[in-house]
Length: 234
Image (tube, rainbow, N blue to C red; front, side, top):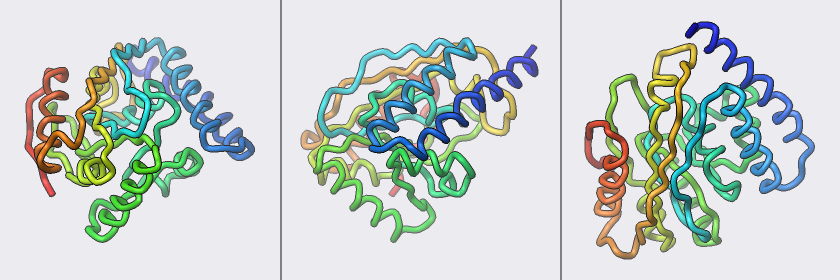
C-alpha cells in the first residue's frame, strides 16, 4: 500500500505543479503567482488525503517565520499554510533544479549559498532591506535535514536580519512531515500534517541575535516532541 500511495502522491504533485509552472510563465505580478502557488499547494495535500491542520497564523506586517526542517515537503507545506505575502530563503542548489528552480524564482524566493560566508552576508543584507520595506519571509535556519529526529543547530543569519530590520520573528513547528517523507526516502507515506504558528517574538526585546534564536528554538521545541540536537551556530 505504501508504494501505491507514494506513487499516487508524486503523480498528484506532477499534475498540480506542471500547470502551475506553465501559468507562472504568463502570470504577471509576484503576489498573484504566490496566491496561485498557495492554492495549488493546498490542493495537492487535499488530493493525497493529507489533512493540513494550521494552528494560529502570523500577524500582518514585516516578520520572519522560522520553521523546523524535517522533510522534502516542508517548502510545499509552508506555501499552503502561510499567507501568499511570504517569500522564502532557500539553499542555492534548489535554483538549479528544472521546473522547481523556475517556480521558486518566479515566486521571488531568495537563494543562499550556505558554504560561502560572503554570499551569506550579501543575502542577509538583502533580507534586511526586504524586511525594512515590509516584506515577510520564511526561513529554515537548520539549512538541511536528515532521518534522525530532532532540531538541528540554527544559523544566525535570519535572526541578525530580523534584529537589524526591527522585524518580529514567528516560530513555526511542522509536525508529521518527517514520517511522511523523511530523508533518503523516495515515496511519501500517508499521514496528517500540522503547522503550529506561534506568537511573534519582538526582535527588539532580545539583547542579540543569539538570544533571539534561543527563544525561537525553545518555542519550536515545545511543540515538536523531538529532541534538541544542537544550539546556535554562526
